[in-house]
Amino acid sequence: MVILYYPKCSTCKKALKYLDDLHLEYEKRDIIIDHPTKEELMKWQSLNDKPLKSFFNVNGKKYRELMLKTKLPFMDDDEIYNLLASDGMLVKRPLLILDDKILIGFKVKEWDQVFKNED
Image (cartoon, rainbow, N blue to C red; front, top):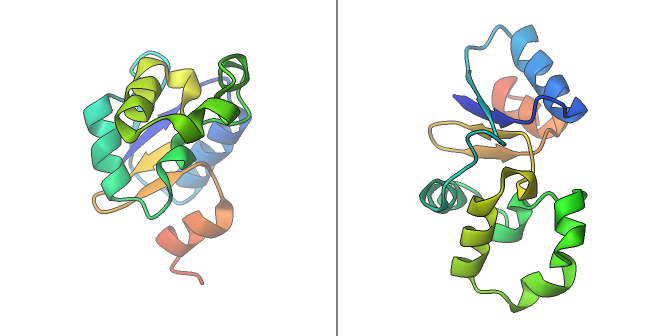
């Protein structure tokens, strides 16, 4: 299991604590230093049941600066993958990569379903 995170992100810190509290082993990957590649994003999207745009950090400064709220609807998937792969600050975090699934963002209920088998 690999978690892509931003060290200064409070939500990422909560996610790491969650994994630590469950004594789970994981590999940490700084999303800014080692941001996702286009190929990784394409693979992860195949594990995801959400739209491609769910990978965007819509609350981020970079997202607003680039005015992506208005531009994304007019972009094709290839353009979106290239954009996401260009800058880790555009990517929603944390990203938790499992063998057969990806969790985008830290939503306790969603993570509990995976790790605690809770509905």
